[in-house]
Length: 76
Image (cartoon, rainbow, N blue to C red; front, side):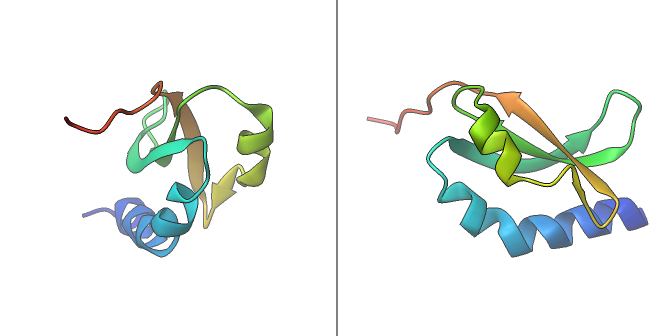
């Protein structure tokens, strides 16, 4: 495991529960940026600058990216 992946997993574990409490956040994961860097991925139900501004651009040199997932519906 790369150092960046280890950092991303640590940060996700620390913050995931808190971030998922935000109304617009549907998931927290990891992925890669367009240039191939490890990043944290915050999935949002809709694009919202207010929610985006809650997050820093990066934590411990790990960038944060946003993806729009739409509303998540529980299984019936």
